[in-house]
Length: 118
Length: 118
DNA sequence: ACAATAATTCAACGATATTTGAAGAGTAGC
DNA sequence: GCTACTCTTCAAATATCGTTGAATTATTGT
Image 1 (cartoon, rainbow over the protein chains, first blue to last red):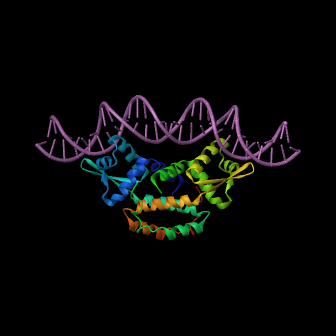
Image 2 (cartoon, chains in turn red, brown, orange, yellow; image 1 turned 90 degrees about the vertical axis):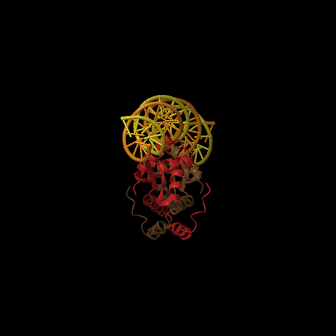
Image 3 (cartoon, each protein chain N blue to C red; image 1 turned 60 degrees about the vertical axis):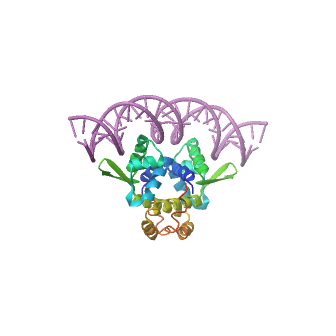
């Protein structure tokens, strides 16, 4: 991942609204959600949500699929994994031992629900 | 890591200048750099760099230490690892299998120099 | 005490980003 | 074709961010 892509993704996640939208969609998995569902779950005006959805989609964090008159949004996990790799490598550059330490303690599949309440 | 901390960190890394500063300091490891060195390496006006250094420091991505009339900045790796954990867990929420897959392919200590040229 | 150096703070300007309501495009059902 | 519905686009207002030069604080060496 290059710096330009990284900054675009960071800029996306720097907005509390967009972070909430992304987290919500990650939680939904492959099922995703249509725009209206996101709007009511997050209590956002449709026009404002649309602005953020466009932003997230253009950054590659979401994918869209038309379903009749609905638009279904899904989180795009691969880009997220690329970002994690990017950060991991940046961190490791000076401290490989800390990085390995991190990898040993990140129990990804067993602790996924720990931070649900926010 | 809570959403507020996460958005503050993302906002920091969303600026190309700050991302460059952070990457540079990660590369320096525990030695860090004083403000003037960063300014000349990145070709930034002192006043502008100071603005971004303050931003990074307040977000917790950098630490500062006074050395006479110099100020030495260092990357704060632990917060970075927290962020990586945060992202990993967010990603895993819907796709634990993808996350494990990522961890299997992220060879942190051996591929640290692959993306040096950007 | 004085001048030189290092870096920050301040104030002002320009550029971006966010929010909102009104209008527009496309779809579904009658 | 018409109406209801879903969502997006547009335009305008507000808010926030980034950059710059001048002034300020603090330290060093004479």
